[in-house]
Image 1: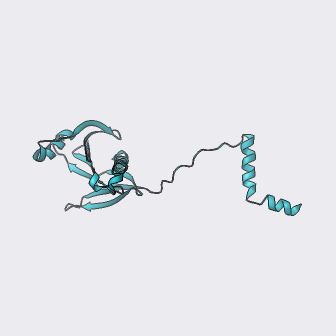
Image 2 (image 1 turned 135 degrees about the vertical axis):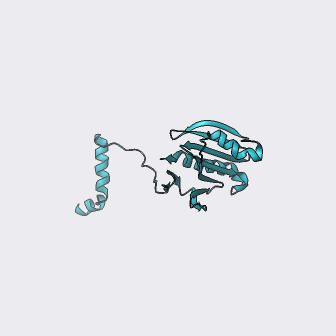
Image 3 (image 1 turned 45 degrees about the vertical axis):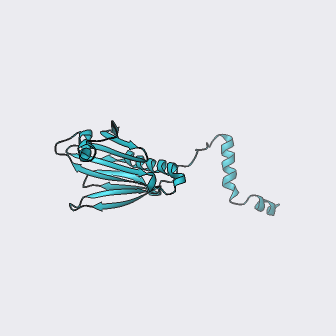
Length: 187
């Protein structure tokens, strides 16, 4: 009998049996799915320019360019194709986002040529300028004092890995970009 007890109820079975007894008695309740591992979510913070954001390192790689004024500009490359860049521009005349954008495209197209909407991004008034055809191009322009914070994404079908999966990959890249944009915090 003693051998039977040892074989049937090894030490590893005690917690399982106890859990089943408590669950049946109503003393324990299932907690639902365990939260997804967030260990691949990384933060980029630029304290000099006063912003931070997060990105999923499993879908995005980060490189940082430094210009002649030693100002950092992070560039995010999406594993499914395309990229996004964060830049901060001086805005001494405190132009509205649409006016700044029109000035940027004046020489090339007589002003911004795509869709434009005034929106809120993380509680800040912003402009969102989009062109979506074979390429998804979007500027998010967020004014703060005498600066304009911009997030510019370009995701084109010819940048994507395989033509047969181009739309799926384009959607995954757009989602990765929007996740970055929606995490942007300006101090």
